[in-house]
Length: 169
Ligand code: 4NP
Image (cartoon, rainbow, N blue to C red; front, side, top):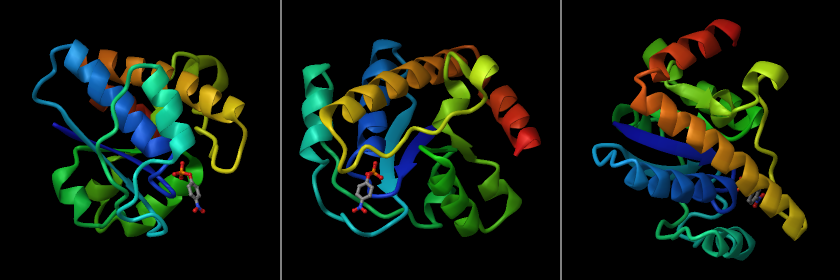
């Protein structure tokens, strides 16, 4: 199984979600699940994650190895799940989908959050240009949703969550 996390620039949120997912999957012993990330835009191709994102992540014990990449429609061929950070990323990804099968792989990470029943699916807001607090809040939100995603993988519930998500889209 291959998971992709996707935001706009691929320097703040999606590298954070990639790093958190990689750590949690390893802890869970889910060796056959791989993770990569991309941005819908090409602004930061080849760049390291934003220093505020990697600094907060490193303080929480995560490692950052990937460089900025732009999402390409061909990524739908290798990804089983394309995790958008916000609704705008989701719209951009759906516009790139070549088939209903591609589109069916797109879900916002917030679909796996612990409070989704109460709040509905929430976006992970863009922290770029914001204060440290925004990066702290972003990680808190990402860690919560990643825990839900890893639990769903372990329990074989991913397709169930996706089906409900698509029905509401
Ligand atoms: P990200 O944040 O989508 O979480 O990586 C952003 C990074 C850069 C830009 C926008 C959002 N930008 O416009 O360059």
